[in-house]
Image (cartoon, rainbow, N blue to C red; front, top):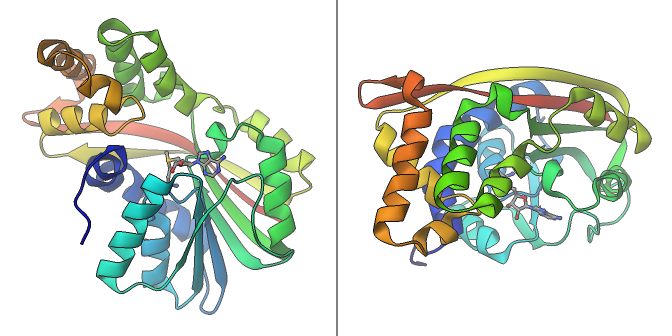
Length: 263
Ligand SMILES: C[S@@+](CC[C@H](N)C(=O)[O-])C[C@H]1O[C@@H](n2cnc3c(N)ncnc32)[C@H](O)[C@@H]1O
């Protein structure tokens, strides 16, 4: 049994239950994996999509990420749950699979980070069978995501602009029209893009704020700060979210584009 340690464990323990699990349910409802299908979880992180897909259909599951730390957590959770999946370390632009390999590919909150988005989408189209389906979830702008805008402002003020930029990068592919161009240029068909807003919640706003700051790519910068500065950053984050506090709890809107398409 591995011991929880760095960024990937903090991501899994705080951000996945509050943010990525509800969005995974939303994506799976639309993409409808079917029994026997071979499903790819692209940029799987700690594996939330693969774990939830396994509950829905006795599909064959393959999950890819370029981060060994994320894959370590994913493998360990899968092993504890007795879940059978292939966990593969690879870059999205260079997938180690034959052509026409998958029936369905799912990709949550990662396309915006790929250094070469067109190459990754062309590569995905190569490995998904003809008439296969893909579903993506990509964050919309800071203007409709108060949690992220409060986080960016708190990091700018208390850690530095580079840390705030890491949050702004989450919203760097926020326009549906840009997504449509990318998927069309990569040769996908029947492209549907829907702006979806979920209301997310955590019963303890303070615990969420501390955990969310530590579970970002910026988390290590935060843990390197003097205690007082890190506390100030978390307090500023909570102050920025004041209108979403309900007693000790936090309820906030979180908005993303969901893209469905066929190869
Ligand atoms: C915000 S996380 C989302 C993870 C997961 N999809 C989820 O829903 O929890 C973004 C993930 O994309 C992965 N990633 C970023 N760029 C990548 C690339 N070029 N190839 C493969 N994985 C990549 C990161 O390692 C990280 O695990």
